[in-house]
Length: 191
Image (cartoon, rainbow, N blue to C red; front, side, top):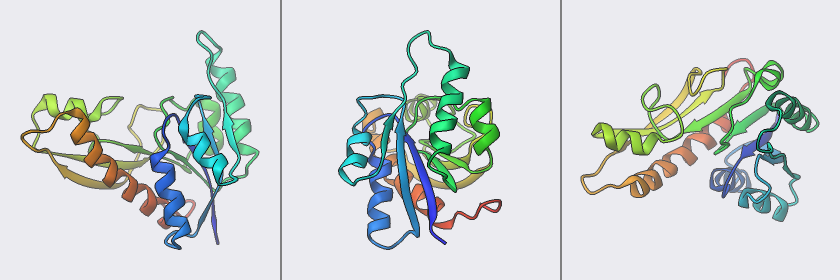
């Protein structure tokens, strides 16, 4: 059975594009039924629209009601009847309403080997810590910050001349592969 996926993103959408490419190549039995972003200027929305995939912007206004935004996001995503929600570069925490509806079937990618270096700056934090290996993680989203059950991980060596940008680019390659693998292997209730 084809997995219906809603992708959440905030930026360029390269993770989502990798998923589109894998689906097109026949490597993943999935359909991206919508792309939703918290930013109306996210390039990932343009990538989706170019493919004829519904692209929805749902920004949280500065000082806006976070609970109302989360409830509206839940309703938007529910309208597409996904089997799986893939948070792929989505830079907002998902709230209680969303997790009540989609908990257990929402995955997220992270540019570090969790539980090390959670939060928004995984590659930077890995460099500052002086580790020799970092990587990428796909995990099941829970109410914490990057604390959910780990589904997949891939290692990336930290090179002596790495800066945040060069390290992050190599991590993104692994992150894309892991996202594709997680979607390809998804079975509700048994990820």
